Amino acid sequence: MRRFVLAMALLFCVGALPMKSTDQKTAVPGDYLFVWAGDADHKGNDFLAVIDADPSSASYGRLLTTLATDQKTMRVHHTEYTMPASGMLFANDHDAGRTFIFDVRDPLHPKTVTSFADMAGYMHPHSYMRLPNGHVLATFQHAHHGESDAQSGMTGGLVEIDDQGKVVRSASNADPAFADALLMPYSLVVLPDADRIVSTNSSMHLDDIFSGVTYQVWRLSDLKLLKTAYLDVGENRYAQTSPEEARLAPDGSVLIQTLGCGLERITGVDTNEPKSKLVYTFPGNWCGVPTVVGHYLVQSVPTIHGLMVVDISNAAKPVEVSRLKLSDTYFPHWTAWGAKTQRIVATSGAAPDRLYLLKLDQATGALTFDDAFRDADSKMGFSFAEREWPQGWKGTGAPHGAVLSR
Image (cartoon, rainbow, N blue to C red; front, side, top):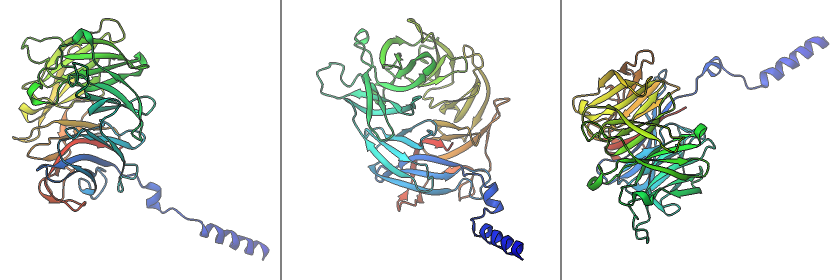
């Protein structure tokens, strides 16, 4: 009898504990796509859209929620390129000169942590790259206008920022040896093992958008500018213009995409004489944000209305392995890779304003549509065209930066 009572007591205690269902035990955390967007008509405000990016979900490709900001859309622009470990995502409206920091650790309930504009004497932040310490290193296109510096507006700087939007350190990219050059920081790549940073100089203004032709090498440990140098000029005398996105190649060299659709390779960044060589030219111009996945570089190429994939196993001699047209009229710009879902996101920011998820075969480099990623209209991709948005706004969204969860 005593054993029976004891057994019943133990059973009661166990029954009182919270039990996980079979579904809870096997449940996989959701995957999400965070898209930074604005009002295409520039009447509404910038907002962050959260889309279901879990291929196993019944609502795959559907809008889950949005987070509106108080910023009237001017030119919604860059986010970080990949989701940071902290879950604090940086995104800017470039023409407003304003950056937002979003807490997206709870994807269905994102929050605005803070926002900032000018910092440490610099204005109009453009790109963000995470440092080994978790902080962001941002490029700012301009020093404050009106300063005594004759290069004010033609030079900018780098600023290290923490996740609360506080300045940690900063440095100017002005170089007396290039007093007449356009030195507007655009993008950057961090090489911790070499204690180096490589940044590009390119203008966001149409009147001098093709005037940038330089890159710069910095020491990471103290943000000392070590070298400003011209990019290699290719046969068409054009592909080197307006250097934009810098990416690390598998061999440790740096590849720089240009608006002139060139691919420049920078070597020797840890020496006194880094070298630039134009190693590839994509068709057309206005090439946008590239993504490196393993030994492939995926490049948005507007003139083909799609993306091209080149094998960069030998970064000195990239070789095309595939291309994918997104539509007859699509103008691709942004790309980003989600390592968890093994998908590439592509946005345009121009009509037709549809976003796509793509699959990359990492054995062959073949790029294909993810046909299962469909919006509520049952069409492939996600539409930003006229719709009712959760924040209470109705209109057409203009997407730009997009990041998949980690």
